[in-house]
Length: 297
Image (cartoon, rainbow, N blue to C red):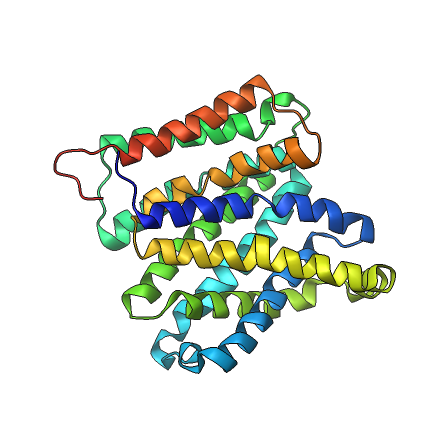
């Protein structure tokens, strides 16, 4: 089995993304909803990156006007639209259904790269995609019952998945034009954060930070570093070294990590179906990395 540095970076990114649920559980008692948490993530992360690059890497802030559309798409489609659609999916269905619909994203990544980069569908790729989706389906817990599905909810979930997948495509466009991952992440976070401002309830912010004070500020900073900036940096750098469809599947480690974190920190049990789902996702990752004659890794 062959594994490159890009695969490891993407895997670690998924593990860090999986910690998001832990922070949401901490934020909710302070009265912060999903929109306010998204604003902390996007605008807060963008400001930190901007300040850091102004000090240590001003060249990374510059982009060409002709490429501005790529960065607009990364921020407004890949992050902002994804957040809006994903929150709407949870509202109309459930967190379990939203997770399953979101992890159809490797299929969208494969389709996008088929049309834009002529990356072929091999038998191994199709099998890996199918195994990954089955694994995500089981890990999500949707079979536990009580999940309502509506046409609007399903469409919102598919929209969230497609927007999520587009981050990989637009990032590849930017990387191919010579931009560094930090430049991509900077504009993704800043533009998404600016787009989230009209949607956020600032009265909730005022109340939350009035009661939480410095403690809540430190929690928000930890959230930005652990669940937001670090995974996007790892994932985007990983895209430089691995195939896009592989990255999309390997990032499913997010669901595995979320289940493990829930067990360790929130005393949430792991069912037999969840365990089988984890094994399926791991099997898909192993399948992708098995050497195959005539296929480049």
